[in-house]
Length: 522
Ligand SMILES: [Zn+2]
Ligand SMILES: [Zn+2]
Image 1 (cartoon, helix red, strand yellow):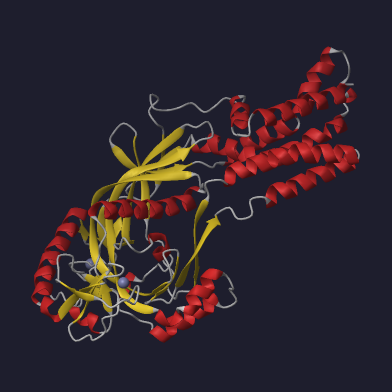
Image 2 (image 1 turned 45 degrees about the vertical axis):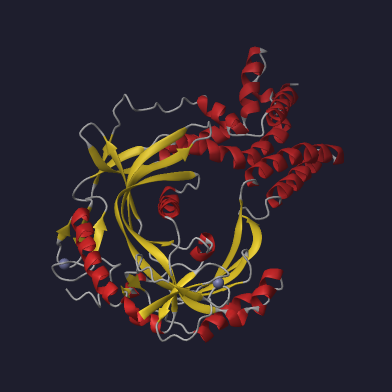
């Protein structure tokens, strides 16, 4: 087999050489051109054979390179024998000789495609107009931007796990699934910030080549230094993130999490081209050497929810204005104070724990097509079968609308039987006096009905088995495992439970409710 020119990251058909992709429903590789089917196990075996052949071939040529260690930052690099430069690409110290370890040699490489000059121009573009400390620090060190191949593990394989949906009443629902990832890049340097390097992804793995020492004639390559345990943890994080992104889109629900276990994956050790300059542990810039995508680490924390105070501020002003128009300035102030506190407490609770390191990115000539595949598997009594889960249906949307309307007109619903018992006609209810209540749900629903809808829907999926011909068939869970749909009144319990700000909110609601009913029937 000619191992020199194949791309070890993309899976090819043994029969015709075309792209072979993984059919997650049937759990095997299928060739798009000739239909040849190969099991995951066979493909992994094929790959392991290739790997040992390659390793022997590469070791025979190991004399063409030497290994250096940086006494200052500890990074180890391999360079071509005739490379005169002994400057550390990460901290610019002079490196010293180290023994060639050779035990972790790369198997694949994506060659540099954009020049150092181009990389500097792209970085300068991103920094243009930024006047913060990080931007100035990077501008000062711009000429130190150096290309280097960084070590990655490209994970490909099958995973089994669960999608976990957290419901509002603190309970969780688990939905078993299988996932296949065709190439997830995991950074194998423990001294380079993982999240920051994620910023220059994606790489186009279609351009990967079998590794050859010839590539090191022009660039240094960093030696991986991540421990087995750290690598495993990074693989878990990165694969779970990919499946999460996939499910988040399909389920229209951000508040899910993913648990995955390896079920037979192979990772290819690869070198990926990156231009890098480090100013400090917290400030750095990187440019993707293949696509030109730029990422800078700014040393700041970024709040994911952005201006968290903006929504409660607007909500408070609106409700104060409503108070002013239906009554007077005093009512406006009262409304503003009471609701303002609630809005800010709720919004602040939601925004805590949302701080991450800020990474700013721009550009890149390659857009990743979504190649993460996930499918649910369920047992309806005859073993696990691939399943589609549906949560949102017309009936359920109508039910949520009905609950919403019932909440909005709750004072009317309470006032009506009271008036009837007092022997008064329904027309005696002064519906307009409930104005303060009617506007309240508009704001609370934004926090609460969303949670209610989620609890109603995501706790109770509609199962559809995916049949071999691609069609789906509605299936019912065995009654022993099935949780009954909540009764209509239970929805109100969930509604209140989902308003986490507690007693204060419930007190205000009761006060408003009793006040509105009293005003209507007086
Ligand atoms: Zn084929
Ligand atoms: Zn160094």
